[in-house]
Image (cartoon, rainbow, N blue to C red; front, side):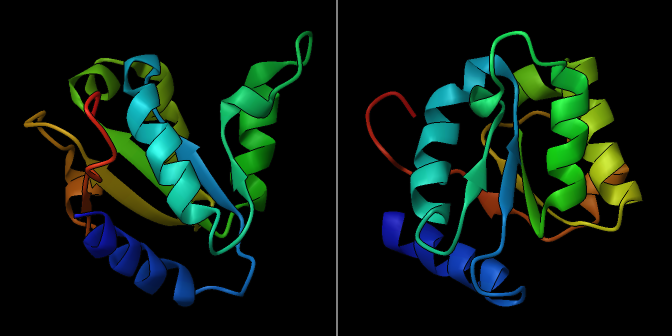
Length: 130
């Protein structure tokens, strides 16, 4: 499964420049999936998650700046993400900014129309917590 996801992720990232910046948007509960995706995406270039926001920095502005600089935005989609207003605002911002947005489906949560129209990836199998 990891090889399959790595191959799919390679195909997604290959469409953009080498060393493309990948931003990962997610709900807190999905952190184990994010860690796995970040390790895989880092093979192809830099990866940004909100874990890189320094204490005291304005986090909404930091996320907006990362989305603006991104070549690829992975949206970890789950029931937790579906119920998060912040995740919704962030992926909509990425679409509005013309970024390549790739949903990563982790469970059976309904995917909104705008995300559902995009080719998606199935969550990676990265360990017992995923």
